[in-house]
Image (tube, rainbow, N blue to C red; front, side, top):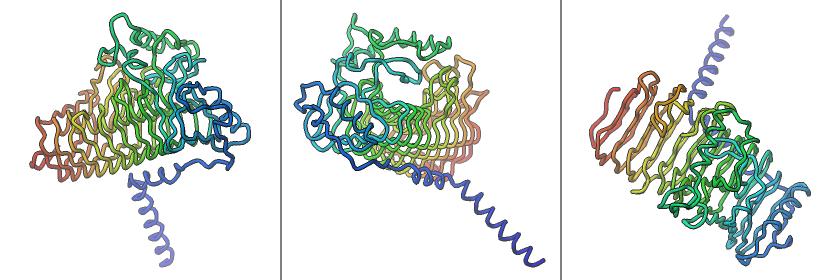
Length: 461
């Protein structure tokens, strides 16, 4: 009887320990980091100059890059080397088991001629599938692919090329010039009507700018060490991918929709030790827009963001707005965010047209110097506002050890009366030099633990 009792006690302690481990979110983050590794490649190497590439900044090297990558793929994989030089090219299509290494003093200059990104490919644009220009670097259905090195990849977006298509005068557009507005509206209408993606034909004449790097339905993807500049639109946009590593990447681009890294409907993603200086959100986690997000219905989940620096941008770490497929299990730690031109630090944005679920968001040790608006912003009235029938769900948000030195609001959170934001915990946080009072509407289960705003201890809900 004594032995049986001792066994029961041991089993109880083991179960209790397992439960406690499961309830520690940062143990889950560590597990994600452990399984997201740099892919391994064969030792073969293929130098692009051996396939006809010329690094003079003028010669168009699209065919040379294609030959090198395809040869590497057919041989069973290896490394395609881009040596020092300035290599002009159109779209690059990566293949399975190919590692593109852009060496020090190498610059890949992406053509500003839209025709160099044809034929069209299946892509996602603002969370909607369509046939459009190829992203500057694209892969579809591939595994074990990487872009690494100390070199520079320059999208050459500017107020002369790509950016005017946004239709903003500050981005170079003038009355009578082409713009994306009409095609964007047509795409959204096709999505709502349920037109199959392969019949949503855009490309030439539609002026929907391509993303920079978009692996689509890929597995084991790594982007490490490189510098990315001046994308036509979003910079890094893994879509429907599994196991993605983005590490020590510098992203510089102040153009329209120049989001830094947007994991979309992707699982097991680690973004660490990167620098973002962007014209839009530094990191924005997404999962598809409206009817298309609900049709595909794949969330973004198991995402770790660690040790990153956010400079200019609309938000440091953002969830949304295209999140109709849901977002869960996001971990943000040891990040520094500061600029008079950084609008918010942590931002959650959706509405009743997009809907979507946000759950299990954890942040710790976040250092915010200065933001222009709110340090923490939750907005259920983004863009279209409360004009649909898909109420967002947002729950289980835990933020610990955040310090902020300057901003308009510490917290600006607005849910719906019928669909409140629930279970939000702030612990050991300090907000100094906040200019205006917080805005908190339709938030249920908001708890403060050792939180100070302008020196005053916040208590209660």
